[in-house]
Length: 275
Image (tube, rainbow, N blue to C red):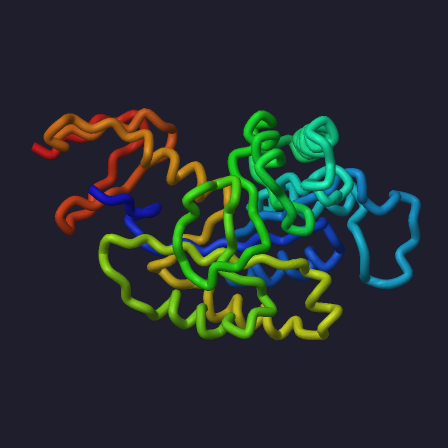
């Protein structure tokens, strides 16, 4: 019995972008154009002041702009710590404050339950991870590229596939979209970055061309980070009889799995009989 992804697929793609900057507006337009889904990680004490006059299309979003952009966008809003500190240089009390205050602000401002996160500057240690577990954070993305499509072993050290400026980006995209793999494997392509980098490098064509290529494939599930996490956990919570003939799904998510090359779906709350 092996996990299959939503609708029985074996590949899922997601994106994770940090800091809540104005270039997210253009990035989301591109993502939505090609049907991509992603997560935007916000520092809620670093919005631009509402009365500030922006001299150029650069910098942090105002809270009003962020709410207009992210709410009902289909994308996830997640924690990035309150002030974007180097978390592993703080004591536990300071880490708790940075995480819980950011989470509370996000939940109040966006009307969601915030359970995801990305580490500011990619920094963390065992102390930080311990705090995240106590603060109700389900997963946290690092900046350590794997250059592969393996699912995370530890969701609190979720390593992305690559940054959008990686010289392996096109190679990885082609391998992910067109590559064949053993039927036992599921694959996740996890792209990360900061949308202001496209202005810094004057290379918006990189993400536009990538999105056009990676999007719109029937065999790929496009999801947010928390959707992927919740799906995997739903699969892990399946109950089975000793002989695997009865499968019960106690979660609120329909789950797909494979037995001897045949794919099944056990719906939310259902007990599926394979006899």
